[in-house]
Amino acid sequence: MDLRDSPDEAAFRAEVRAWLAANLPSEPGREWSRRMYDAGYAGLTWPEEYGGRGEPYTHQAIVLEEFARAEAPQHVNVIALGMAGPTIMAHGTEEQKQRYLAKMLTADEIWCQGFSEPGAGSDLAAVRTRIEPRNGGFVVNGQKVWSSFAHVADFCILVGLTDPAAPRYKGLTYIIVDMKAPGVDVRPLRQLTGEAEFNEIFFTDVDVPADHLLGEVGGGWQVAMTTLLHERGTLGFALGGALEQQVMKLVALAKKRAADDPIIRDRVAQEWIELQALKLTNNRSLTTLMQTGIPGPEGSGSKLHWSEQNQRLTKLAMEILDGEDDGYWGHQRLRSRGNTIEAGTSEILRNIIAERVLGLPRSR
Ligand SMILES: Cc1cc2nc3c(=O)[nH]c(=O)nc-3n(C[C@H](O)[C@H](O)[C@H](O)COP(=O)(O)OP(=O)(O)OC[C@H]3O[C@@H](n4cnc5c(N)ncnc54)[C@H](O)[C@@H]3O)c2cc1C
Image (tube, rainbow, N blue to C red; front, side, top):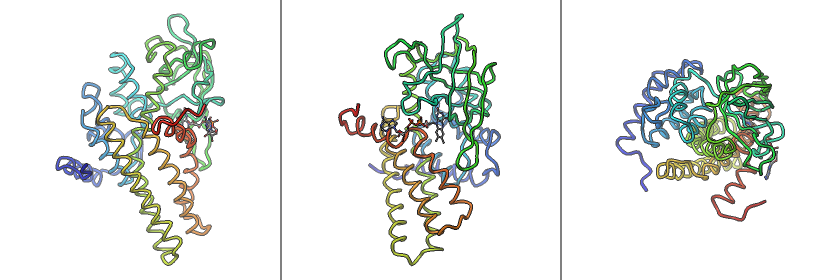
């Protein structure tokens, strides 16, 4: 397999780099996301009838890599582009696709994900938020937690329980909730870093129309699996690019502060080697995606590798700084703690790799 860019890919990469050099914003947000969309870099692989460009996944991978390398802010609608959009494309009606998809790309409507609850994180099938079929639609009561972007979101993809008596996995339903509807209450949560990127969401008798159902009543588990495969599967290239930046910053720090220390040199070199391994794994995931159109379970390997490496290397940077906080690495070290929890904890990802990639017997 030739891993170098084809002439077409090399030309596209040069175009992306030139655009980034001329357009890097001083601030992230809707305005930047809109400019990304206008330039053709949001929804690259999405069908043209839904506002996308119909381009190959290789171009998407190039955009993610180059944006990460340039340290460009992400599109503000990460949940929509990475999860809600692909899920609506897979399970939505034609009316839902026409209604929601294009506005995700332009960032006119922001999305959040309401999966986790105080008593249901890794075990999504344990959700207790009630989605009761009533008056031809649904009524929602319950609480979600750790919902990133909920404080700015217009819509939420929500998994809840329609039939408490049904066998596990069978009583769940997946709906779209309007975050501005009466009865939706969002309360920000402050993180270790001092920022408040995620929230609690309380639902009290929230009316949801029937056409906000995704898939079947009681079929929410299958729809949710599509969301989670996309969450982990499409993340890889952006993570690889971001990690490359981190490793290069670590090298610069080591050169300045610990160039003669043989143990530090050895540990920094090891981080570079681990980065190369991640990049090769990402190429393997890309091959699966191009062959099937669906991210494979290998995406769990990339997410696990990246999150654990990012924690390790931010710790190494702090060791090199010897207790001094230069502002950057201290923040990175604190934020990296969440990396091994969000989008599947390391333990859960190891279970997925063991069972679904390696074919080992189920753990329970
Ligand atoms: C920064 C950040 C952003 C997030 N954004 C969102 C969001 O937008 N929307 C959303 O819905 N959620 C979000 N989450 C929540 C995240 O998905 C959950 O925290 C995660 O799934 C873990 O669930 P939990 O916190 O309930 O932990 P638990 O599931 O209670 O796990 C506790 C511990 O037990 C371990 N464990 C659990 N089950 C097993 C098992 N079967 N085998 C081995 N070990 C196990 C876990 O690995 C963990 O160490 C976010 C989390 C973070 C940190």
